[in-house]
Image (tube, rainbow, N blue to C red; front, side, top):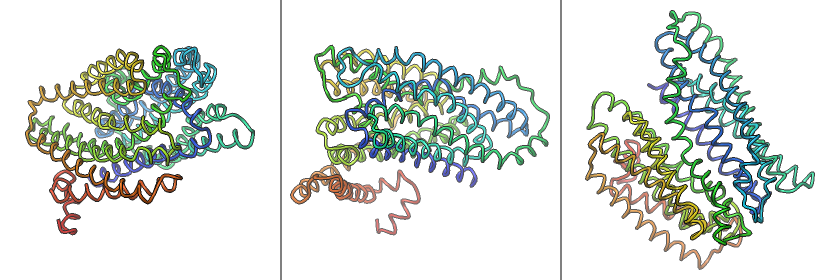
Length: 534
């Protein structure tokens, strides 16, 4: 058990550091390319993320499951056989995906950019998509290799390679953009087209890291292979069939957010144009990149804690321990709200300061951020409820429910954008996610006969605590306005620290005083609260 906990902790830490770096690097990158050009970056990355999901097809997770399964039976030969076949398959699917994205870059760009677009040309978007497409040759291969190590319950290669991949990507991205703009006197658009190539360069860094771990562990794996029991001689065709069945819900779970962004990418500019709302500011770039980066911060805070509860649901459901499943569901819902809601409220109230620190002073940017931040609660809730469906063996509903929400987003997006601009796109996202999450919950309630008055009372308590915290934050902000403005990024950062600190102290105090934090976050919090006298 200790090795499992250690492995999980290592993997979680690597993922968290990688995600944090993925948020921080945007600050210097934004300052180099500017508000007028940053949106071009996300025009390339959204199609890339979708094509990458199709290229990988959930295979690494399924692959680690199969490797672990046969390793537990002492059959190490089957896992190695699948590794050779799987890496070859990922090379083929990766190359095909690269060709598709490269060849269809221009049609995608023409769909994305309206004829009266004032900021980017079709050629700009086409080149950005083509540069990022090269990463598809490398990333699927790397992802499957990580799955092999995970099948041996060896999480270090995945965690370290993800971190190295992100570091190499960011160094190449920032260094390349700096060189293009300040050394070779290139344009910011050229810098962005060069910067998106960093996805491929970063992946090469990840592969080199995995190669180091493979060289280190290969003698041990070869000894296990030499002592392997007689192979079960499972046909690769049968294994791939089961992998596909298992992987499809995983794909939908992973690409839910990019799919909603892709709808915006395909419809936003044309809807703005048809509604007579032509803007010289790249509103889609703010919505889907700069604001979206900040919106995902509270999602990172909550999802890790909530998702850690999901394996318990699988175990209890398999054992028909329905009472334990219900209790775990209770805790998942409460932890999700307890962690996400205060972060969303605090960041919404500090949206001006946050946008200034990460990017620049922008009334439009901070307004879009403030309106978009509440959606973070839904971004957190969907993967949690979908994972619960996986735990109770209702995977097909993930596909059905997400498709329904996505269809609503696609239908409502254009008319709402024509009427309300970026707020319309946000509203369509909210409606789509609410419907998908609501349908997830209906399946959970029906399958588990799930009812909980206690959760209802706790949700009310969490809302009350957040309202009190919001009042304290408002008073702190009003008082600080008399002495400290937002004249530069440093002062805005000081405001975030001071005002955010007030909110954190008040919410933490209320959570401990009511005993809610101890009940939701476990024994370690209880020990800390006792030392503090609660």
